[in-house]
Image 1 (tube, each protein chain N blue to C red):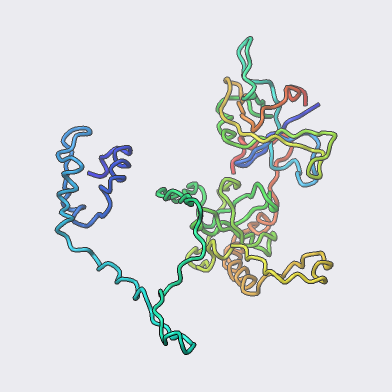
Image 2 (image 1 turned 180 degrees about the vertical axis):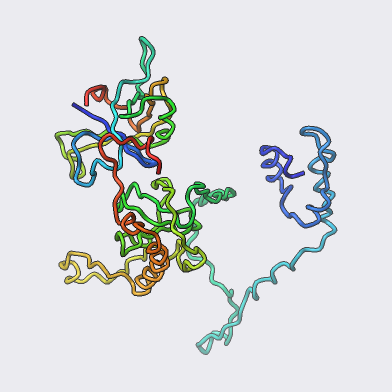
Length: 263
Length: 117
């Protein structure tokens, strides 16, 4: 029944809490039925009433009243009475003068990114933009963010493990035979996130030092690059000329039109 | 005097004849701006007509649809460290049956861009 609802109706019903708590009962024994286009047997309020919420027991008890509101504290001073009862958590000293606008709830979720059918683990891709434009590179796997994980391999063409957007890539028909399951699970979006620069107390020396020192790549990352590349290199060496192919850059020569090329 | 080139990639883009060091006539296709979308007496400057080199039929244009386009030109005043400037856009659809293509740019192209390469 849910599938037959049009989107508009679905959203409106959802707003009323119609689909709030879907239990397995809802799936197996739907409470409503479609009689004709847009016409259901029971109205919204009837269906909600059918859910018998008033008879159901709450799933979990309401969180136990947060630990006691007041506490007793010992007070110094002879004439102060020895103890005093105060609130457990102190009231805030500052209250906003006007209501702070609360941002709307985000109910939309980004869908999973589809990659072109021509891009399959092991495919040789041509990078079209960025520092490594023109380089031919091996596709390893798609990350959760939708970006493609790619590696030169570094030894062949200097392209490290890298994330790349499929929009800036041409997929060739050349494929390297690699076992994707062996690609380290560590390689995900978090691996590539930039580390926040450590804030150092500004010293005079630091101010005059000027240039940022470029830190060498972390050892574990170097090791991961090597191990991933080994996977690829083993497969590359088996195919004649593939290594040189990956080392060569792609470019259009005079008179070549990309639409006429077969990649 | 002003030229355009069409670069490839989700970006194929236009660029002028002069090549920058980092562009090696490599990843883009060249083209010309023919004019604005128009009827005989009225023109719509928001969409430009582009002729891409080597593209002669409407079937050929399919590859270029959606690709990015850059109109690159020189200026006297330096901006952000460069005297070369660029207007980006995208190819949106074919025009006619002989390989011409319509493109929409972030800012409309100057009429100076028409023709000559």
